[in-house]
Length: 404
Ligand SMILES: [Zn+2]
Image (cartoon, rainbow, N blue to C red; front, side, top):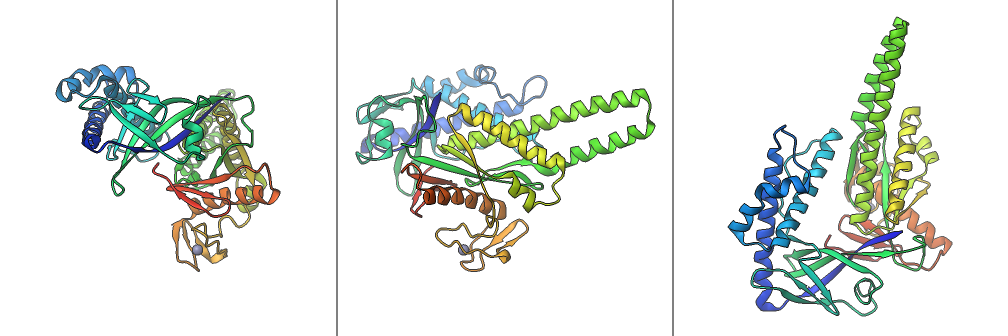
């Protein structure tokens, strides 16, 4: 099985080359945007273009001629654009509001042709020729574990520029073949997931809002209404129609959950998570006493599909009892727990005043609870972290910001 992680490495860029990297980054962003603009305009049948091989020939030569951007970076820009367009189309299919992607971040995507890794430094394609930048990290750090030696194979990377710090960070994808992905010896990062019968189907501790449950429920009601109507007719042809609309609805809802589970696992991979934590099903039944049989099936199915896809990435899926996860304040070390903290979608801590989306707060608490349980049981001696939108929080409350 292949394990996949992201190593975030600070770079020391020679002062006289920093502007070359910046210019490359700006040109890369503009190129990716031109690919997105073209893809968004659509093909002959008016579909948004999400295929890299379809998108590349449409503007590649033009961009190369206009900008002289390194050919491998131009290919990276196509891939970056195609990924953004695919995410958009998936959201459309989920009935979510979406608009044309606009690239604003300071990011350059380096495929394995545009970057080379050496002992202690890397070489990056850029205007003015390759830039050599040294890695900056302590010897016993997680970055050293990923980057030094041959234990992890280094794939492509994203170069990000942190403006306030005036610093470049390299986000390197590293992979390793592993027999036992559940090995406890390594650093583990946990993604908490809150699931709901209305609003968003799943909300993560990293702040991803996934799947429009209202749409799922609406389609279910429409299906029930048509079925009831046909049953009243009681004819043989009505019976056959019931079967066929039943099959169609089953396929549609499975596809809906398939896309949601895919996005969940992708969120976990993007944040280097090793574990995805849901609330247990008994907890859902207690918390949402009016959840229908269908909704309970949807939760089970979401978990089953997530489990299946997560395993392929070397990520495990766990559950916790969700008691108090919607009432506890997840902000920093506050932890104040009270029923009055939550009011519908809004969470406002009555002690520290922190305001958060209620589901996002719950997702963070679900991950936190899992970490607490692990700590209490003293399992493995591994270091566990909870993945947040802007960094990770360890089981003992140490916060480390990330640039992801
Ligand atoms: Zn609080």
